[in-house]
Length: 430
Image 1 (tube, rainbow, N blue to C red):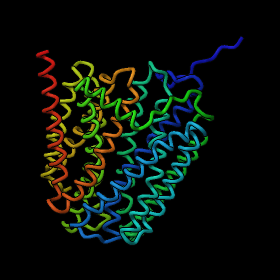
Image 2 (image 1 turned 120 degrees about the vertical axis):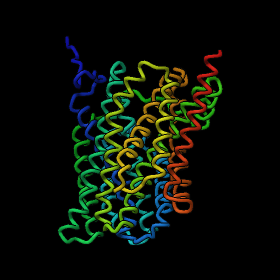
Image 3 (image 1 turned 135 degrees about the horizontal axis):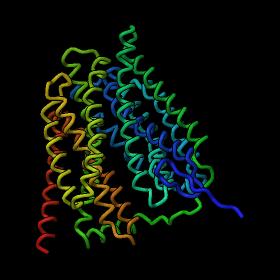
Image 4 (image 1 turned 180 degrees about the vertical axis):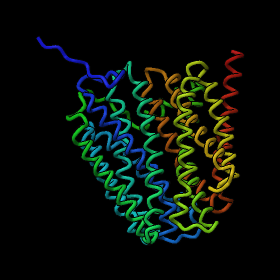
């Protein structure tokens, strides 16, 4: 007679067949995944300045097009990668995704024209789709249901830490290399080479450490039209689900503003103030890191607050904080400004509040029998938030002003807050 021993990672109970090493490998992969995705957003303005010499008044549209193309490719490939991982396993798809990212990091600094850079971004997006899909899929596979929330929280911490350290460490490499006499273009190439090496190392770790084999249970995949119809019907029956969709939309829009336009604005302003391209990239890391560290620390506080208040109220509070943060960000974009630390903190708080609120409201309001469709449609709203911000924000950044994307997203946050207040008032009258 044999007895199965339940594997645990600290207090987290793991699903049958998963070992502590499997879970530790996944957390490392999550750390690197988000770190690399944050870093590529941060370094793109550097490439536009150092390699392509794109004029400052055209960089918003360039960054917007790069982000828009990246999200379209990722949207098209997420479902195929998910189906592929059901057939051959999560391990090979995650590992191949990191190898693909490594190749993309190697190719990026070789681009000498914007069409070549766009082609590199499209190539890189294939790897983004693979690792992004596996990031969510392995997260769903690994813990037992009664430990899911805790494991999600731990994973979120590692993701935020990865984004912070990737920008803090790699973002300063070009300046250090330039200080030793290397030109800006070569410094960028070496920096991206280091990122490629990290991706290759992570691919090896994933191959050795993730659970082998294919999933024992594979959920049925609904056609897109069925998912859309079911998700919309659920929101018609419960307006709070519309609120959750809106939160999901703006939480991913917030990520684009911080990851793309905030770093671009900081670097451009530093260059305009007389710093070199490498020095500007280094100067931009401080406010960016402050925003991410603020988000990490406040995530714990906001998470505790969520257990003591109505989830819709939490969403309203989140939108209020985010609205103030992004509107404030529209006024200050100089890394040497005395106000930049406060603005960075507000941006970080706004981003994490929007993300946590969207997840908690969805978790509370999604009916159990159509939960998959509701979360699927929420994912589509998230992608729409990215597409909207990269397209509209990129144009407004160049044509209206560098603070325009911040004002737009701040107004969107405020509008969603007003809708949440309406829901609270309607519920109190019911």
